[in-house]
Image (cartoon, rainbow, N blue to C red):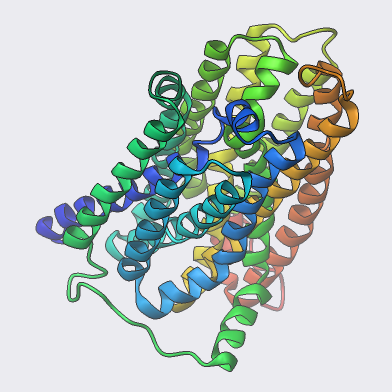
Length: 435
């Protein structure tokens, strides 16, 4: 890649990354406002969960259509549309004063959010050489999570200093600025500002989806994303702040610090995981399984701790949970290496559904269990209720780890069948007799 094109690629990536950053900020902005939202709209824990469940459900359901749209219309057009929807929805949420109004606003936050990440990954695949794609993919994921940092500490300050409406107005203004920057800077390719793929009818769409899902590498990526992302997402989007404040007795400032540490952990592990999967691609699933085991173990220790857990242990918990973010990005690398270029975005959309389906399931379960275990006359959620609620995560880890174990065997067998030489190079084993 020529020097001029390398500079252009970095500029385009930085603008697209900034859009993703703001999308994560919008997505996570309710995390530190959960208790305030419950008071503002006079709602229960289950109703509060509905905000995030609806947002994540829409996000997850949109992933496959967005992947198809990116393959058809190019990432620039889809990114522009997503930024416009996201900004408008956050602006509406700033003025919401009823539960129904706020719920409809979060619906469109989910729609706009869903149209950002797949576009950024497609731009990475289009503008960077293959050897740099794993690193740039990880950097996209981890740097985008700085939006959650902005939602943790600055958003807490803005809500307390400016109030609900002005705090959310400020976040919507960021989206408006980036809408202009995307329009001016982002290009789909060196040759064209906007590119278009082939027009697919219903049969073509079905064939593309079927071909992507049929490959065990795509399914393996889906279950990797499913199993690793949801714990940190649930903490960062909604239940981390109430858990630390009411379940563990911490101050709001300490809870915000823990959420910030978790995001910094996500950022710290990203480059390391990128190096590992580039160096040892055969062991990508092993890395993910180790991360799942580590997260589940830390949650077991915290929930089994007599009384409230010490602060240092909660720090370890959020650091380990932060590993799940970069581990979930490994799933996209499986999708990239398992599918041809013309359907990479479709496969990415399928894989990206996994973590968010797991997240919305967990958010809903936690809300239901909290309502079940909290007495009607209680002023807040008791610690015992959080122990029950947070234990729901173990069901999803068990399911995900089982599926990863299944599909990594199928994926390796498929690679042996399709490309035995690559199978031999990655596994370090001789090709079996007969091949």
